[in-house]
Image 1 (cartoon, rainbow, N blue to C red):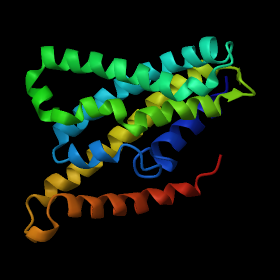
Image 2: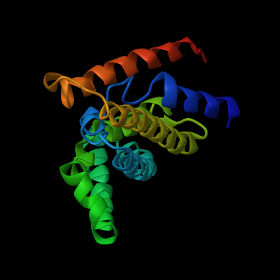
Image 3: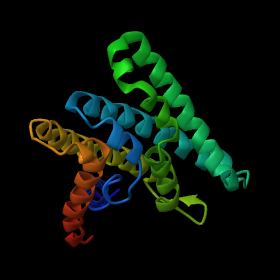
Length: 202
């Protein structure tokens, strides 16, 4: 395993190809839960748990089940089932131990099941770290690390967005652009700002 490869995965996942601001995955939770910093951070941590664990399980399923039995065409449905199982587990834990946080998340916690950011990482791992249906050396560690880095990028975008929206609550904003219209404008400007990281080359 190469240290440079880990650095490349970190910088590209967090900054250059940020899952929200560059790949435009997971926008529903990004817009809906980023009104305040605490729920945004909590959502980021929840996504970190789901992506990290699903990266491990989907790698194992792809390596030891789908490839040996030549059923890689079932990748989509198997990955979605794994993600759904972990989201249900997370929902049960949050509902039991932090009911207040569960109420803050509302419908958006179960929506992690169909959060395309989580599924996108699982697919990206299988595309990047497998060649001719064979795992490249260190692919398991790379897949897990990439899942963690994508989650960090997701959380970073959520915190930046929530910080901006909290500050804007103190401003006199025309009623016609409050809430979602302004959120999309902010998101587009953040996306333009993150395009500056495209200058990094690996």
